[in-house]
Length: 89
Image (cartoon, rainbow, N blue to C red; front, side, top):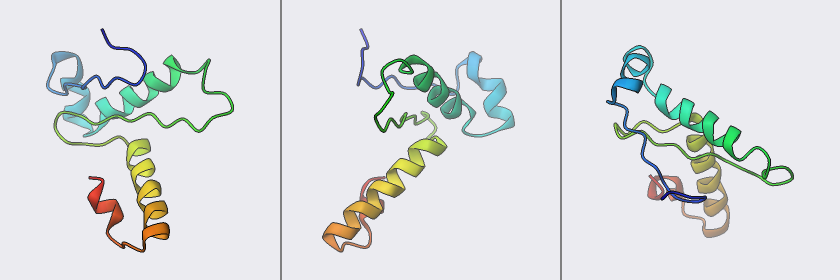
C-alpha cells in the first residue's frame, strides 16, 4: 500500500501514457505532478510543497527539476561545492 511520502513510479510505456508521451516527452511526469498537487491540496496550505515526478524513461517533471536546481543552489551556497546539483541527479 502506498501512502504519503511513498514513491509510486510512473510507467511511461503503459498504454494509458503512451499516446501522450509519443507527442510530448515528460507528459506523464507533468500529469503525475498535477495529480499530486490535487491529491494533497487540502494539506499543503501554508507549506512549500513540491510534487516530485520522475518517469521510468528518466524524464523529470518541470517542478521536480526546479526543486532539484534550487536545492543544489542552496547546498552550493553553504558548502561552496559548485557541482552540488550534479550530485543530486
